[in-house]
Length: 96
Image 1 (cartoon, rainbow, N blue to C red):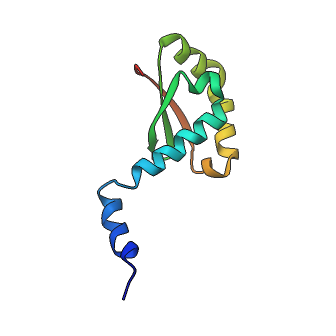
Image 2 (image 1 turned 60 degrees about the vertical axis):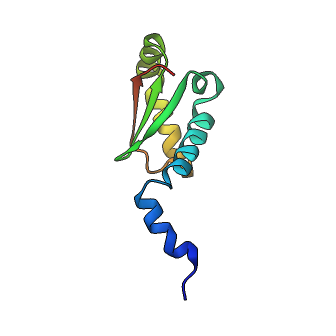
């Protein structure tokens, strides 16, 4: 006999049910690394092929993050045990 959780987990993961939990962890990681000021004006879209994609609320913030903070934020993410799989950080202009 197998545990019900062992039987149900793989199909649920294939359907994407595990994504919401992963998205929550990514959002918490981003808030911890970016800080309150930045995280309140951004939101994590997802992680694809090692690239953390973050939505930015306006063009001025996009320019600031890309020009002045991207490198430091990427390095801070990589130093965190939960962010070690992140290779790159990409910002996209999107309304919150």
